[in-house]
Length: 183
Length: 102
Image 1: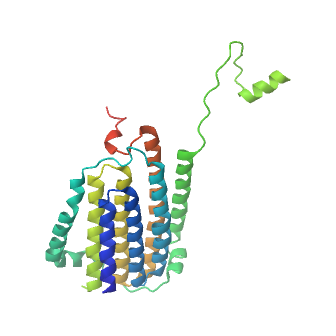
Image 2: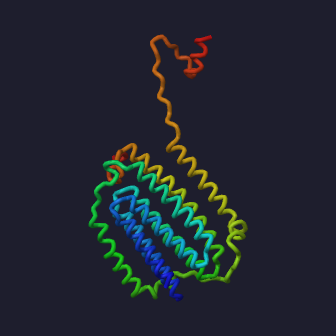
Image 3: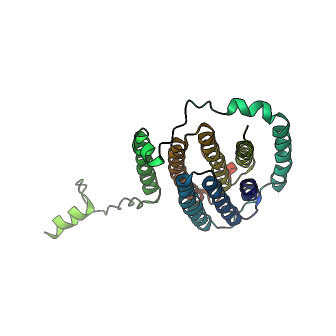
């Protein structure tokens, strides 16, 4: 019962995140949905995934969204969208739910993976053993992300200096040129 | 099928639908990213459900951790792009990002 309640909270707050008019409310609703997903994971005996979901998705990504919203909070940041399209979402969801209720039993078994044999390797051994290459991929992703952010928000390029009438084009940087003149 | 897994798959379908609908309908760049986030939540739920179904929670959690790491990098870089686009255009409307239009 608790599991079902948590899933309902997750779907409900995801819907609020899409339909809210204020972007800040959307970001907060997304964080609450992440917390609900964390509790679902914990209940499904996946504590490590729950930990990462809570710290990264509910914490870090919410903070990133809130800071980005504050950075772009301008006159046009909250542009007028066609709200009636968002209000149609619950109708579509009801239709989807009815379709799944009627035909889900035929589709779902074919979606479920056929397990070979249960494997109770702990997540640490799995991550540092057979899935070690994933860690290399994660490190590459983090490095590329840091490089991308540094490229976006790094120091701006200096504009080229204007040359005076008597200056000679030496190909030196301005600092070197001044130093030679002073000498 | 186990009713818990059926409920999880039901919720996964809902989350993916909500996220894709958000990406299709919204014109705001930040709301598009919120749609991406919701889809990734659905994918994480499906991963853990599949791990529980076959009794391999270790592998499922390892995949989920990798997915979370990829997700946070994607969101951080995309938010950086959004902020730069706002600085260049003064708007978050995707319909106004038409500089490359022929």
